[in-house]
Length: 443
Image (cartoon, rainbow, N blue to C red; front, side, top):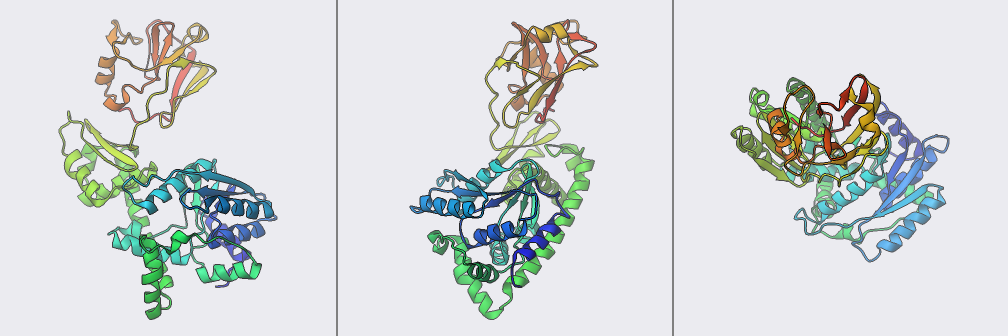
């Protein structure tokens, strides 16, 4: 195919049948051939559109030329009248994941931070990238989702990650760039055959192409077939997840045991994807099925890997980030909302609720705190003061959240435990409602 701005616009329109029209296009702009073509074609195709464009360059600070690449990208974006941003990241080369994976993780973390609600992050992956990804995943022993390679569009943070060039060859992109007189930068690391993708790109795919000239198109078809199979598995996982209670962050053990081992693995992988957590390897999944699920109810086993962890408590299998955030420092409650930190949600206060804190208690001022040990509390409707630790245990609050449950104090008196309990004598009907929005799984 011959690539041009009209073809790009047609592909974006097709993707809008899957995802809502974007609030903004956020282009992952490396300054290389592919992203340069994407940015120029996008600008041409959306000149009459009301969708703003932002070019975001991620500086990995791994090459001596990185500063000049940033300058080139800025000049290119500004020449097109496109808003430009640069994010410098630190690549954890000692993470044990390898330099390619570590750089990719740092890059997507930075790009994730640039997205607002409804934004589309546009990446310039093309047909040869798809072929390389499929082969890499085959070598790694991936299942249907891996063999499906790079998806055209999927949810990503508060927005979507779209790849509108997957049906375009690199030769078509280069032809467009040369016809438009575009300038781009070449990253010398793309020639380093120590990296698996470069080895496939420079040594393996050319040999395959010499035998089967349309190898990239063939692999693209295989990826589509695998994508359909992966979609059917996702549909099955949705059915199973609904039967398991519809909470991807907590899967009931007894419900999981009613499924075959294959469906257990499928449901767990799907739930992790819904939560935006890293999917496990086959070995890690086997540990979940063979160690966590059969564990005693009073045990607290843990399986963790980069980007996620799985814990068991009582009848629940809990899917969590790799590291739990610490509770924020204590402070005075100001206004009708207080953010509790990444992953802990927001505590909101609603005047005129059917039931809640008494208005005078709220108006006197509240202090936010967290369990330090030794707190006592008399919940509304109970005759005696209890140890807070004992209340949390009896209610089944998971151990790792007990020190992260927000507490509200009026002076030195504990008057509310998040939206779980209000203290006797501090409640009223109507009152100030307490809502813990976006809270992690507690039970």
